[in-house]
Amino acid sequence: MPASKLLPPRWFVKLFNYEYWTWWIFFLPMVPYWAYLALRNRSLTYFTTVNPCIPDGGVFGESKMDILNQINAKYLPISLLLPLGEPFEQTTQRIKTVQLGFPLIAKPDVGGRGFRVEKIDTPAELQQYLAEAIMPVILQEFVDYDLELGVMYARLPNQPQGRVTSIAQKEFLHIEGDGHSSLGQLLEQHPRARMAIEELRERLRNDWQLVIPARQNRLVQPIGNHCLGTKFLNANHLINDQLSAVFDAISLPIEGFYYGRFDLKVSNLADLYAGKNMKIMELNGATSEPGHVYDPAYRLWQAYRDVAQHMKIVANISAINIKRGVAPTPLRQLIRNSKAFFDVSGQI
Image 1 (cartoon, one colour):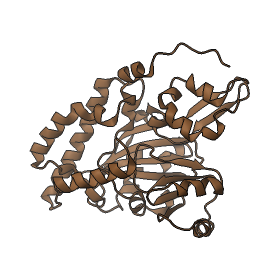
Image 2 (image 1 turned 90 degrees about the vertical axis):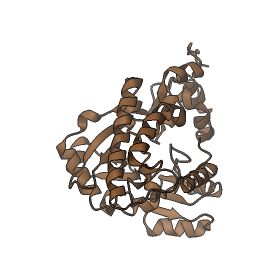
Image 3 (image 1 turned 90 degrees about the horizontal axis):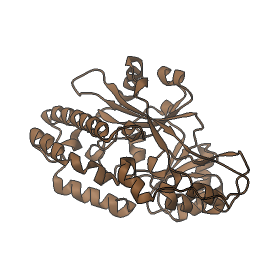
Image 4 (image 1 turned 180 degrees about the vertical axis):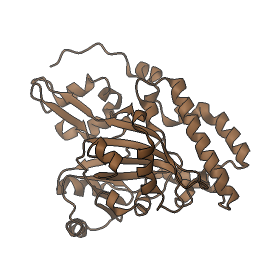
């Protein structure tokens, strides 16, 4: 049994570290600025026009697979969309047909913030995951590249080039064994893991009592979401004209795409700047967050400053698209769409 460290209560840590706040609490102070931008654009839902190629611009509830299908296949991992209730024998055959091997990543076609995104190691685990699915599921190649990044990109519709506006580098949750403590005991004493302990206990229930050998470093959570213990680091120093040109090459062929975050893995920085050995797992739209603001070293005022800058970018893009005839989603319809998303996903 490990000696318990004297750690502050989780509620205390959450109170003074905004990266652990519920998303709507974090964004609540930005409502007056959103109201100002809405007044300027003469629409409460102006932001739904930011990406005409994505339903509602990419607010809530869009199909991840529909978006991926708009990206050049050379940037994508092997991906397969499974309809709800498909017989497992048919799924197994389809996996073989596209040459998708284990381990793989399974996630709902609609969702966010790491909801039900899991690494699947065996066919039995996949069958159990699919049995619990409540919506179509994407199976995706597990990309074993060293760097995982969240790259924000924006382009004004009347401009031929865009620019990268934010980069978050993701540092995955690891623990080191001591030879006598179980995985669960180590996680309960880990300053980041303890903040997501309920989720981790459910995901790692089969290994919770496993004793980790001394000095063994173990990757606990391969899913790059800060709600699941991943640390987001400010990597904006990587932004330059060369990188913006790489994402122009990716983005310009996507007709009607102007703003969003590419969640990707890449083998190294040289390949990132060359636009090769890169796999885009997801592309998110209007409600994309500049992930660098969740760096633990960042100040709250800096986070709100950078969020406001990105809100202004969305408003500027939307203003041009509205003038071009793109109609904002009516408020009642957006509320219905968003409610359906939250009802299904259970996210708050």
